Length: 384
Image (cartoon, rainbow, N blue to C red; front, side):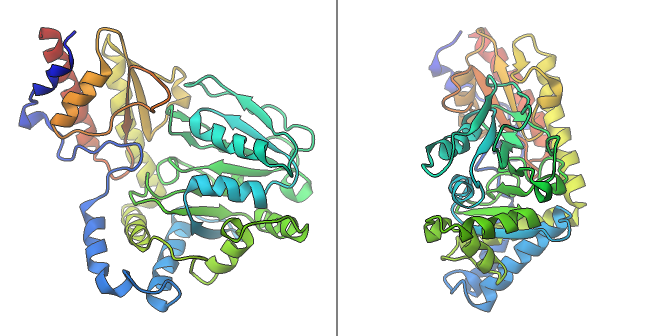
């Protein structure tokens, strides 16, 4: 196998994708979103977030997401400063009454479990762990558990989990709230939001925006829980106070100054998706793109989907192991020199792997071109 000097390999121009961005987050931003940001200009950039222009932008985001996800009656679109990392702390402080149960599929789902485990005012969580690349079963809800949590899509491994309520009573009858981390799944995977009480995400994946915000689709039961926990007098920093976020969201604003550019790109992306058929269109597109990757890997003796169970393979983040005859790091270096970027595996996973983001903004034709380019690079490396 060649060394890293192989980066002088040039891929023929006719094989290259039109756009070489395949990151799993941040993800490809469409030219239309950049144009929307430029057009926003003096209307919203550098202006107060409590005045009509920015509040109208927030209203566009909230209305667009409500339509995209066919929001059930009584559910609300709530947003706040920070990303999903911040929302784990928000949920720990404001939604978990006494004890949480977590399904841990990888790096990101483990972080929310760590947050509730560290909270001195909560009982130790029930944590159900699976090996990276596998989808464990949540099992029965543990004693005293009032929140169950898992990711819709584990970005670090490319495992996709179903969104269904666990067996047992609903929250209104004493059952747990269902909190689903949808950061890399929202907008790219099918979902019935009524199966959740908080379907939350950051906008830099399927929504092709920047970071700096979290968005949560909250059920009436979750909104009631916010009030219930607040009434206990639990100390809550204002920046993590979900009651404050709810109050401000109802006014189409955030507690502190938001990332306005993020909101502009998010609004444009949501409306772009709605204009093409909404969530059903977006999920069909990601299924087609990920299918290209998985079918390609299955046809190569040196490539294998990392997630063995087909039903658990993500439709938005495809992880492909390469065997020992192909150095994935060298392949990634060659691709980058040729303008194809961000197909590296999650940093702590430590696998000889390609991780390919195929969110709705990514053209399926570009995904097919990517696989052709990888074939070309591997063939050239084997010749050297």
